[in-house]
Length: 296
Image (cartoon, rainbow, N blue to C red; front, side, top):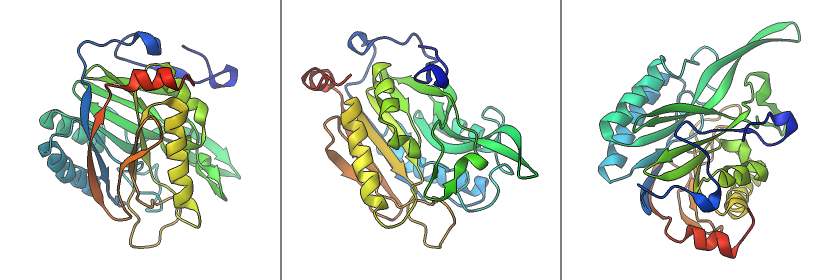
């Protein structure tokens, strides 16, 4: 499935083999129950300090048997802590990205964490802007790749696209025979993206997030995350930034990371503060659910 956004759904980026139909997924080898960790942190403005926070929390989650570790959007540098382009780095050579890669390989896990990578230079209102990609790093178990957020947060008076270039490819990776799709934060408002990931074989969709605080925003986050699970009949693993103790500009996070099953039920969740949620994802009945709710 390769088509530009202007002509249909985004392209599928699967570097681990051919995309196969939902009803013809590869089954060997695979896990039927996968232990995951949603690691809800409050990142700051120093990416090396944030890397150390990832190292500490990931080591603890791996010790509890988690195989897939999900961190929030903007783990490398929180929104509202300075210019994103000044700490943006190449996925393959940057200190944060390669540090997380080495950590994941050492722990024998896959880590998904939000970061920023250089994108392009644009002229706007007489100013030269060095835009970045809002990237979800996927690394460990021989993987080292990234998904660039497709739907930038241009809403409620905030314009992420001024500093962030939208991506144009969906992303699916394979972990122990299980297809995992990736989305980021504001993507939650676009159900078609989640259905396309499921049609590409995704059984789990991870969503690093840094959700805007405000009246009604928590309720929106909960409704949207549950709805995307129903739309795609997939497990949704949404990991948000914990609510910061100080006031920040932009979407800084409100916590409440959650594990939502394919029927839209919240299986586990966090509160406002930093917390790690460990959960066992049971994939054994997913195909039965998809047969009984044929939305794909």
